[in-house]
Image (cartoon, rainbow, N blue to C red; front, side, top):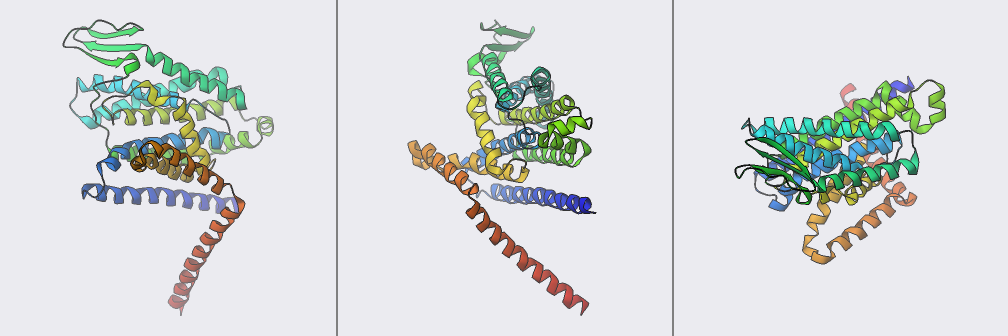
Length: 360
């Protein structure tokens, strides 16, 4: 009975999170269509959704599985450039923006999942700091490979080169140009598409966590030896989480890339991995709702601080430190818990009063 109550409470919280996201989406869409939001805010809507997907996907690895990954931006990079490559090919055969973006997102996710599987098979036997170092190295390898990768398309087909740019016909075009990244991208990402993708990823994660597989994964996180003793396959579940997390990061990378006309490898460096990890830590390990809020606020904050010019990153860092200190201070947490408790008690009293009046 206790388990049922816990499950119902968890499901209720999940529905509240998704309902709140949907409400925010509707409000933002109304403001955008009404011309109330600025171009700066409108330009950040797709990246915010992409970083929110990155945050919840990394939280699946760090918070639910309990393994530290410092190369999450590498999977985002695979999805971004892989998705741009497939999307560009699709645009040669179809004029539908939605179809091109959909195929590119699926392809980017599959490529990133494959990369996660390939890196996961040899290294997931590692734990803690060792796994973090290997994932960090993986992210740097991806960045280095893209820096020397050239992919062109002309009437004769695809031309791929490393270090040296391949020769293509004049009417052809370069899809990926080494350190310059992907140029001439057709901007087909939309806020609505990015939001739908975010909701789908959130639904997948919530269903995974509440399933038997999710309970096995959390058992590994809490006590690996005990989990192994009851027959839980450690490698199987680690690979599953790593692949799902990588696939979501890849899809986020594809949506992110198609929001810009040019995307360079530096967009997905070590700093991006650390930034996403900050979203997860700030929002709370294992808390998808917290990761969503942290990702949205910390993605938007630097843009809102542009008026401070050279001091905006300093202000951003100070705000980040204060928030981190505040969220880890027991007194501050207790203070907000009391406020939330009082608000809940007010609603409970009103509900009880209505029920008594109805019965009376």
